[in-house]
Image (cartoon, rainbow, N blue to C red; front, top):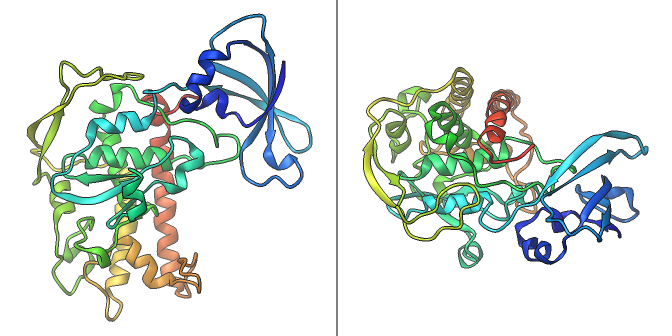
Length: 352
């Protein structure tokens, strides 16, 4: 049997029931960009696959040649099948918490296609709350939430990885403090951090007043206290009845035990470069007249970039100094993303 179409029926956990019935051997296949077809928009792969229906095999992966627009083969790619309980959103459930909320994580489907809808906010939309696309961020889960958003955004989406699924990781990340702290730095300064002081107290300022020349006291020092090891939080303690681990679909509950980091968090050199670039941007903002002492990165961007008639934030500013500083921050963040990327595969958040 020959088939062509999107590859979610091969990869997505929502199609696991379909794969329970459709069992066959994939003999060969190739993918091409969707816009190869007339009037088709979007950056995703179209797969052409040949199946041997006479051999009933579980579909776990398919290996496809990659054709460019000029019909040249430019390598191959594996598309991995993912079942219920094996995606990153299942892992995230281990860290749900509602005590002392400092923000909200908006999360959607666990593939690159949905990444633009994954961000941190201080005021979720009612529709997202109703559709259970929101989870609270607290002192107890900020590290895991930072890992989640970092893993989702440190690798750029493209047409070829558009349907790749983010997975339930192995437990290697739990002992890797540098990885955890890299992810915290990434989450603090990434553009998908949409925390705003206009929606309440901003707990995400990664500096103290003296660092940035602020003229007024910040309403919250949570983030610097957390970084300096002054915040006590509850560490997750797995229940004996919880089947943790990749692919686990266990029930039961998890408990938490008090834990206090006795020392300040240690950041890698590359993460420190992000903080330095961010500090210069904050200092420049606080030198502006009528600035808001509690401004977040999102507020700073809005101040300099403004919005168009449709209410969308502009991509650039008329202030060249700001453009230089935000450019430096983005360059430092890109280098940090490249440092995080290999760990995404090492810990099983993605399969190569």
